[in-house]
Image (cartoon, rainbow, N blue to C red; front, top):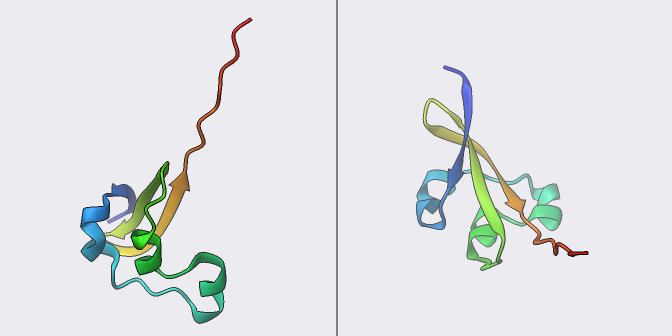
Amino acid sequence: MPIALRPVARSEFDLVSRIEVEPDQIRFSGTVAQAFEEDEDGVDFHAILDQNRAHGIFRKKYHARRLHSR
């Protein structure tokens, strides 16, 4: 089965809770638990799935842009 990406709601933490960040990378990204604990506006989580099992996670931050009218 191919790898799939899908959004993960904060309420679905159990889906990705077993993913571990390499110790030398925690200072850059934090742990998965820390990411879910942060209540940051404009952030969406996405899981990397293989047969409905999460093997990775990433977060996407959206920045609002102001449109200027002329």
